[in-house]
Image (cartoon, rainbow, N blue to C red; front, side):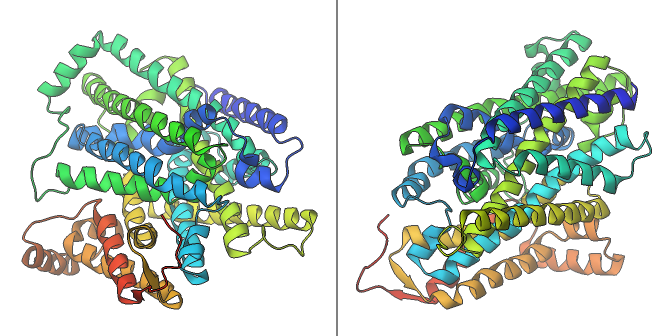
Amino acid sequence: MSPFILFSFVIGYFLLLLLVAYITSRNSNNDSFFIGNRSSNWMLVAFGMIGTSLSGVTFVSVPGTVGSVGFQYFQVVIGYFLGYLVIAFVLLPIYYRLNLTSIYLYLQKRFGPVSYKTGAIFFIVSRALGATARMYLVVNILQIFILNRMGVPFWLTASVILLLILLYTFEGGVKTIVYTDTLQTTFMLLGLVVCVITLMNKMDLSFGAVLNTLQENKLAKIFNTDINAPGFFVKQILGGMFITIAMTGLDQEMMQKNISVRTLRDSQKNILTLSTILLFVNFLFLFMGGLLYLYAAQTGVTVKGDDLFPTIALGGTLTVAISVIFIIGLISALFPSADGALTALTSSFCIDILGLKKNELLSEQKKRTTRLTVHLSFAVLFFLLVMLFKWIDDKSIIDVILKVAGYTYGPLLGLFAFGILTHRKLNDRYALIICLLSPCIIFFIDLLNNPEWFVKRFNLSADTAQSLLSVSEKLFGGFKISIEILIFNGLLTFLGLFIISKKDTKRELVKE
């Protein structure tokens, strides 16, 4: 199919988003940008958050994992569900009771200004890296399958996409994103369902027949019972649970949409609805991954991983309509994560780092000018990080995202857990040191435990690789730490905070 035709659909989609942004951002102000004036409809938020939670990584990377580990990713999804229950019944009541605009204000109320700034900084680092990794995946696919054939360089593609995201989030912020995310989630799920039905019809297989064929080819196994393996089901479920608690419940991007809902009860309904839907949607993505591998075997397609879905969808073996639907679904998966992250980072930096909301000396116009400047600055940072991921050029971006999350969200998990689970008084001025030290220690543990990951991605020399593998075997005896590294990081942070704390005899603390 002509890349110009595909590109015209991309442009048309952007124009639709700009129209929605124009309608929803009229009469907007700073409160609209930060928390949507606390008037968002919980059903719209829940539906839109499906797209934010999934992103382009789920759209492309999750189906690609089926060829190597079957349906084992669903173990993580089960953990996600449990994590959402903790968010709904532990974290949200705290956020609403304290009437927070930024969730990191909890850390200030509980510990002090250093802990508060530390939490915000770790969120900014975590979300910037995670969002740009997701963005790189989708931009790179558009580049390889469309824009390379049009002679457009990668840096220009990334720049234009970021410019378009800026255009429709510049004024409305959360108020606009609630509606654009709903639109984009609709297109993404529509793309998923249509692709599944098309592949089943192409191979003349029913749903049951597909599952039977996948089981025969050992592609539908969910639970891994090897305790030493990275995919051991207990590790994966616990890791998924704490990833959701950290990457959703302790993440300003995700929570600013939830606390934009008027009441706690509606916000909880939003989370419970979202968690249930995600169980079915993630299973459908894995099911599609199995279909893609079966179809690839029939048609002689040899690519695997992140490249499989785009190769089949855009390779000409399916209909032109599927190519268009894939592209629309792909960019619909990109923007809920990219636009939300850009808005949340702007909100967090303005509120948590600059103290913009509580600065009564600044006029609304001055605050608006500052907010827009910060928003533009983060767009530039996004561009630089996308270019960094292009340079790294990893073939399984979901691996990278989960690894980065383990390092950067661990201190956040430790801070909030210490605040909620203990009544001890923290020596606040040392909080940043503990939160920096913990991921550094975890990095060296991870390097020794899982040297293969680092050897593969950083092209370490053969001698260095052999030395690391030898040390790993002696220390761990074949036991592999996987996504549960986030838990270890959080526990290490918790222990460090305990060391720099003391019993609070006055008990003048925020009651959870």
